[in-house]
Length: 68
Image 1 (cartoon, rainbow, N blue to C red):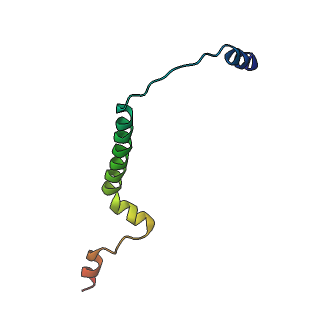
Image 2 (cartoon, helix red, strand yellow):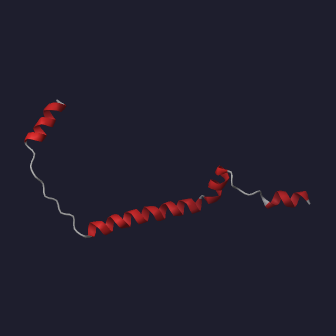
Image 3 (cartoon, one colour):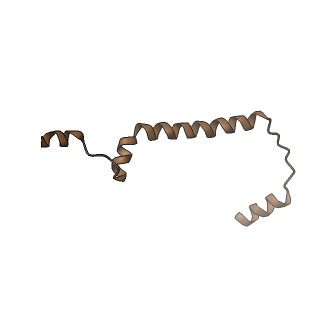
């Protein structure tokens, strides 16, 4: 059945003419920049958790104060 569908699409295909206006590029650019900004905000929101998970978190100052 898949082969028959494929043959049908190949034999009876027509040319299609599509038009992308100049505004399409700016919309794509806005989507990409918005995604980058969203990733930056997410990283900023979870920065301390990320550092702790990677093992770069600094020791709490409270532990140092308790030793005194």
